[in-house]
Amino acid sequence: MRVLYSAVFYLIIPFVLFRLYWRGFKTPHHRLRWNERLALYNQQYPQGVIWFHAVSVGEVEALFPLVKQMQALHPDSPILITTMTPTGSARVKAVLGESVAHVYVPYDIPDAVYRFMRCFKPKIAVMIETEIWPNLFIYCGKHNIPLYIVNARIAAKSVANYQKMSALIHPALAHVDMIATQTQADAEHFIAIGGSKDKVKNLGNIKFDVEISQDTIDQGLQLKAELFKDRFVWLIASTHKDEEAIFLELYPQLKAKIPELLLVIVPRHQQRFAEVKKICEAELTTVMRSSNARVNAQTDLYVVDSIGELKMFYAAADIAFVGGSMVSAGGHNILEAAAVGVPVLFGPYMTNFKEIADGVLKQQAAIQCQTTDDVVQAVFELYQQPDYRAALCARGKTFIHDNQGTVIRICDLLESAFNP
Image 1: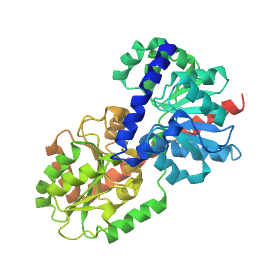
Image 2: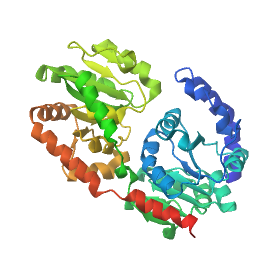
Image 3: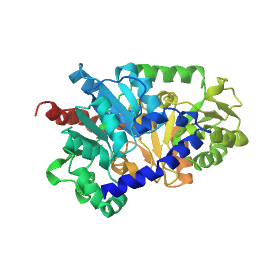
């Protein structure tokens, strides 16, 4: 089965590369560094690395506390982080800079995997969340490279699809030393797709170990005082296609009740910045972050067309609605907003963060809005009741604090690879 998988992968490589080139018309970064995706390197990299792989921005953000902890435990060991997307790559470089090596993960074809492994010679491989690459995993097994999947999760609806590929997935998972899942349900899902019961542990979600620096919060507060002075800031984070239109339609209803209201939208994907700009400017008086223009009394909307500033803008907001949840995108991480200390709202579509959503609602630490009418009501109630806002913030921080510690548990697990 793996031979067929590899053959098909080789056949589609030209189309995959063409797609990257085509996407590069909107986002030029997709055209760059294509050689890394085939493990064709033009510079020297460290060997004997501790290797972490994360797909994109969300997984990378969750990874940072774990990487920093491993740097502290193994200061003499070089660390490599691979990603799949330009936005994930940008965050690695912005946060960790030269303290780690970084390339795109190679395509899962045998010769690219071989070149990648020969270049970096990893002493341990750590995959984040739901990354199962048969050729990479087989190589690790054959060359005695300890392999872990951490913060692992699989949605219930995906289990059946993985089971249909059991001839490919089972041999790959057989080479994994341990799978550390976010929840007990995730543990059961990994076992159902072929993970060995004695190699699957529920260690919790490292996203609870989110780190928000005081500098980031101070920068947000300064932004609020200088750019958004005297405005009630309603931030919509990580929006997807068709989601901005929902909030643009709601804005006039709320503006009539909240004269000082300012809507701030942060699109999830960089390649949509131009599209979002066009949509917003057609509806409201809009200022783009990239324009460096000032917000005045006539400004209705501020669009953050930049990468890596979301936490700072959370700190500048009075309330935050976490997007990807008013359309069927599965939702996004609400813990960063709660950790900053802003009241959190989200929509009905939270399948990717179901356990977190259930937990935060149980603690009455956030508000879920099933309809647009719910959104209007919740925003207006929060505007009218500062004490309610403060209570949500306090309960949100308590919810995070009570669920922290997963990074330490995962580090203890990974240490077994260094001290067998």
